[in-house]
Image 1: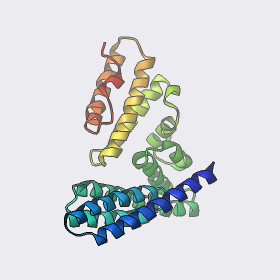
Image 2 (image 1 turned 60 degrees about the vertical axis):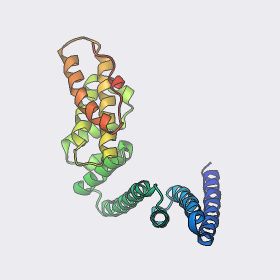
Image 3 (image 1 turned 90 degrees about the vertical axis):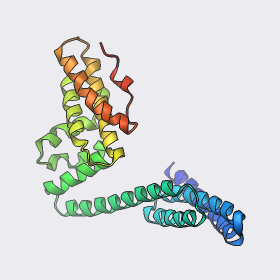
Length: 239
């Protein structure tokens, strides 16, 4: 299956490269209004090419998007803001991959380095929304909150107990710092809400504990709504 996927991706890449080259020739050959139309087609072709390149090579994808942005500026294409955002995302992913490699090399040289382990875990949990991958470093962490809560984040949500769901929700909410990029903050808040909802599912009693949890869940829900990361309905009806 992996070989088939690689073959398909390779075919898609070659096809996208050829289409981009064809659009480039059309763009160079045209003048006036026709050049602008050809330029739009070239930009769209290069964006598609970058989508495929990004699956295996962030650096090449960034180069393609820079070329697309240059053409978009030249013809006044209205996708310039979108291209800038896409390029920034690719650069961030590329930089993150380089940071991960450097940190993994450091950790390989010293498997007891708690500081490096914490940095790796933070990248996986906060930036990549992948607590399962972060579990590779949990035994080395010297931060008690991370040692207790990271295994909970890596568990399926429907296996959490009431106490675990409350602890996990509070921890994830604490990680969603205001200075984080919107997508990262939104993902953390969304996971916190899922944990709080699990608590509410396990605690049907209309008591002070449930009311406290409903109120606690309100704060991340309001914030997550700003990022399109949650629906109020996820919390269940107020009782």
